[in-house]
Length: 96
Image (tube, rainbow, N blue to C red):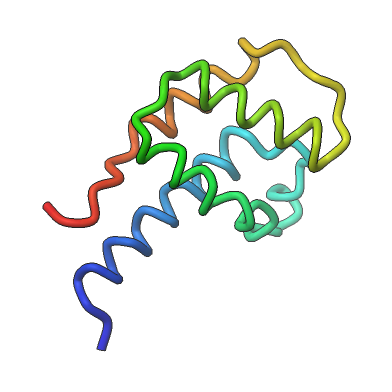
C-alpha cells in the first residue's frame, strides 16, 4: 500500500516531468512518444526547488544541463525563463 507521502512525492515528480517534457524538451523526444528521457534530471531539479531558488538559478541549471550533459551550445539564459517559472510554480511540499 502506498502512503500519502509516497503518493505526494510521485505527484511532484510527475509535475516536474511534465514541465521538462512539455516546456523544455531540448532534444525533441517527447513528440516521438518518449516521456522518460529527462527523468534523470527530476531529482536534481527537485533538490534545487527545495532551496527556494530564483528563476535565474533554475534557468542557469537547465542551461548547464543542456551544455554539459547534452553538448548543446549555451543558449541565452532568457530562453530558459519560461520553463524556470513553470518549475517554480510547482507545489513541492510533501505534506500539507
